[in-house]
Amino acid sequence: MIEETAKRPFIHRQLLPQTVKYIASSIPEQSKEKLETKLIKGAYIENRYAQAKIPHKYVIEYYLMYTLCFLALFTSIWVLRSLLCEIVQDKVVGTLGAMLFALIFPFFEVLGGYYYDIIEIMFMFIAARFALRGNWLGLLIITPIAEANKESFLFFLATLFPLARMHFPLKKAATLTLSTLFIAGITYLYIRQLYVGNPGDMADWRIRDHMQAIFELSSYFYTTSIYGLPLGEGMFLPHMICVIYIVRKAWNHLTSAWKGHAKIALVINGILYFMFVLPNEIRDLSLLYVSFMILTAFFIRDIIQKSVR
Image (cartoon, rainbow, N blue to C red; front, side, top):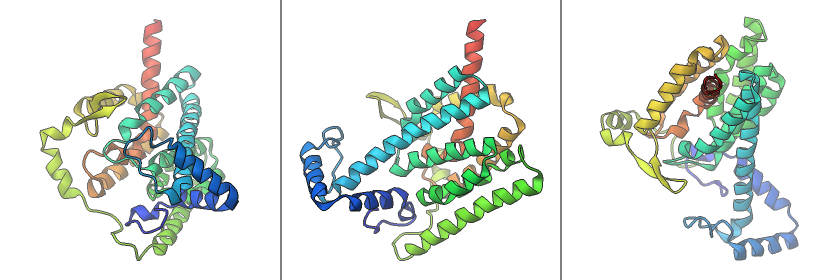
């Protein structure tokens, strides 16, 4: 990714690679050499992750990306807490919901998580926060940045139309939504043109893989090591039962705008998932994360209220 030789569509996700390259190139040469030596000798990440193989010439970029991903996760939790507190009108519930997201995030990333996933989620939380407040100027500003991270942000913007209707009449809401989609589309086309010569395709077709996985019982019982425990990954059946239960119990708490957002996200993400995503990769259901965390917050609130009674 840093050398810009990766396959498409992965090469299109250039926000962090270009950012770390720019930061690293801005470091004075003498200081850069000392920092490289310290990081190589320290092997801080390698000591914790056996599979980490960091090329020495990119050691600064690697550590910068690791740091930025952590900061993005921290920012995601902070923004999500703010979002949930406003929607649920309960600071305790909002805090618990954000904490739960931090706890279950590793489950989203099994079967192929990438560095740009947490950046994607962060921008989706921020975009939902802007839309809830009617801050479409902020949304217009972050759109090209978020789109440079991952092309899925364009589709997420379409799910925000019901939230725009909370603040604006139909024509203005449609105009604002289409404006963000236009900016995201132009950004994507520009980045795509830069790497048109790279190997790979715009997307991989996965419909046949999904048709096979649906009828394989083992697909619903994959396990992996998370937090040092043998826990479920992907479309693990007990997890899916929990998700369905939470949605069923909390759905009626959503306003019509958030229900509309969730329905649009489900349709778009469902189509994209079965067409282009490998089976069981729940990280690619990211358009639904905002809706699910809001539903989870309401579910937590109900549990607390029942326990108090």
